[in-house]
Length: 221
Image (cartoon, rainbow, N blue to C red; front, side):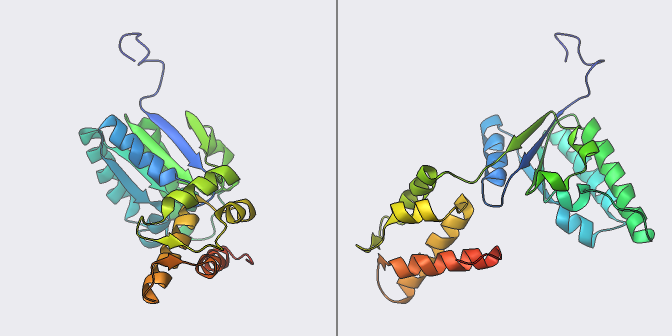
């Protein structure tokens, strides 16, 4: 911007869209970027903003942008499609306020002289006109079977023992779970073992945990 005199030609800052299924590491990556660059990461849940603060959003977010600019924060907008999704016709005052807030946020994000990361579970939910405003769009896929196996093997406590009939390779092959979901299953199975007064994780503990994760997603398991 300065050494090459590009500041008059390029807008300030950098905007990136992280998209992919829940639990694939979008938030974790934003936190790691903050750690790597020595910057604080400020997370804004846009689903909460959209549902609870209509009318107050502009004022609250203006403060966040001003502070972020001053302190060098990375801004991380979670649940981005809640506010930046494909816009429908304006039917009432609530819709009009929401559209004003979208326009305000777009303008502030575009003029923000810093790093802004937006996270969405589904890219197709975002307005295409908005997608063009990003410098980068990064897909976070579900882990492959070999990656899932590594997550399973590394996820358990060193104090836990795995039952002899617990085949992690087969589980990793058969169940296409995100990393966050795998850790939820491991947490559930570990608590079941502790509740029963044992340190052995059984195949039934794991299968029940997987069924619960599928139920959250509306799938059979």
